[in-house]
Image (tube, rainbow, N blue to C red; front, side, top):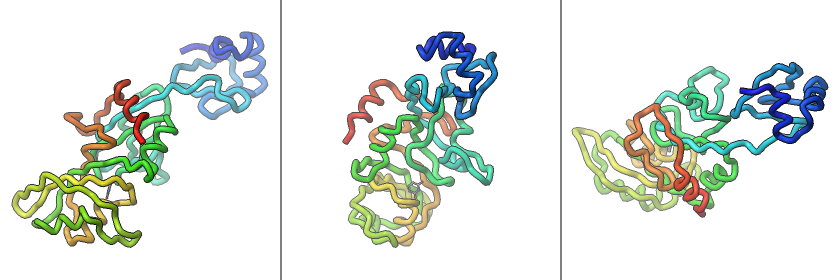
Length: 234
Ligand code: URA
């Protein structure tokens, strides 16, 4: 942590003395709030603006989280429910989820502050594949092929999907479903339309990244190789 005027000076904004004047004049914001006090200490994760312009490029952060059920994938909730950000320690900046998982869905969720990559990974035209481990009640058997061909929902026919690794246990059926659309509650609605409501849903793969053995509620940073790979998609 360093004093704000020193950080401004090091960023080449102005001399230390001139930087103090900028602060006193109310022209400097830290994390969206005007700071007029000269002793203020700031660190690498703080977002500093002078006259509304960021003083440095925000460091890009890429996180892969294994989201548990019972967390919202938003950055805050007016009703005060837990969000995925509650699962992160100080990661060195502000990040937000890439797309969404339902409150009652678990599994792979990326978080980043890279807007360009978020756009690419969430825009339907890029057709990023997402694989879910689906548990339904009952034994649908060959009916699952209807999920692959496309199923009519209230917002139209779903694109072809892929069903793999079907297995049954008692009166439950488990399978992997890969889709590349991202409609609201899509997997739940597809299975319900088939007559087999989802009992549990976990995303195990997103844009070719895998959850692997990452425990629930834990996260890791993406590797340089993974970041490059995602940026090269589409
Ligand atoms: N489909 C759903 O129904 N829910 C999710 O969270 C993700 C995909």
